[in-house]
Length: 337
Length: 270
Image (cartoon, rainbow over all chains, first blue to last red; front, side, top):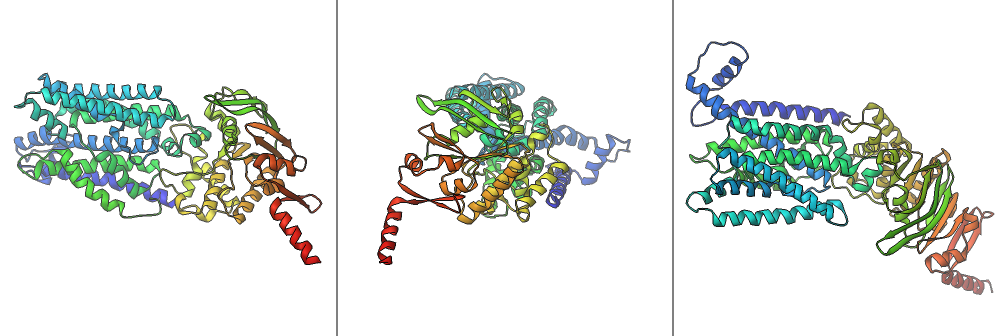
């Protein structure tokens, strides 16, 4: 029980850390903004305050940095939470949000929309819809596979996922190499450069609809890691809980990938970071995954938009930062690892 | 609470695993199931636990037919102690045992103070309270078996199913676990276990069910069921069965060893 309270403090600490990093992130960028100005503008929205900053500063903060920072937090939180949830309900530490083909489907949807010269919002929408469709197909085929349901889902995910990857390659092949092909490739590398308030409005609803049930069901996820037979004998309706988690996770993943493109690693690595910090009990693990995911993504996105004059795609950075960190983490052992 | 099985048959595809099995375990009894490897003991248990639904025949727990019962309703009647637990993730012993209380809390909440007290009591009674904060994968297999038993106890179901609870334990822990099981039975639990040790089954069981090729070879009190012929029929091994302490204990000695020992002692007596 003392460990319980300690973990609650850690989760609260992660929340405070996230807030601090959010505030600091507003100050980062080519256009210099001081911390005082950031706080001043933030407070002026709740409390009438005499303006001591330039109008341009407010525009940069509210219209450019604000949506991007929020979206980075949301995407990081969602991918990490989904990864943690999938690791539990598939009883598999290697599970990640794209295990059921959500990313492969989104990639195809985006590529197809780019090929048809659609607007950026239509690209997002198409990615979202194809992502949902892919997971639906994966689930549908898995029901036809005889034997263990988890194995069926994972196999079906691999098969349908590679089918959509091939389809994406086909789209790349026929795309115009002067403008469409680079656009597709850039989308596939992941970026939040296009983040605006419209993307936030679009993603917020499916993300919330997905995340809330996941957080509510987090004790049941513990029981599901015990295996199908044992958790059923403990009175858990395994198939219903797993399906609920899949639906919720698919909504959040599809929404995340649709606005950010392909960002690997976060959904696999961050849950393991959270496991090292608070242990495997989902009661603390899931909130810790949400917060660490948001922190990590925000930090990576800050590097992405500030390190070089050109933006570095997020998918590249998450791997470059995530992989060495993961190895460092795996070399340390504790009582619960 | 009693377990009654009537004409239970189960097929895996073309393969008939269980053939018209019938038996009864009364409330507050320890029933041991014996049989060679692959005879269908685990299949029988999975049917009784409601994990395999496609069986023919009837399974009654305390007079209730389990056909059509949901997972939560089943869990209130019967709890499961698996032979091994392969953890995907390492939990503390306390968290592991706490999971057993899940059926008593709603889907959107987690077990609270009341359930935590149950866990403490179960760990205390099995003598593993000092392991509470240890990781499950960091304790010995005997301790793990006791943790799994504690997890079944906090589920507060009157029937326990134990799949070879002693198979991966050393001799001391085997006897310790079975003694614990026996005391649970005397408190009113009905326990059905599978075992590969006829000697221990004789010492601890109230009733024995012998299975061969998916069918019942014998069922009843151990002193009626156990014989040299039964052991041969089950395991293809000739044994000499020695009765001790006015038949309160019987031990099996492989025949070729018993014969050699008898001959040797005869020679030394000359």
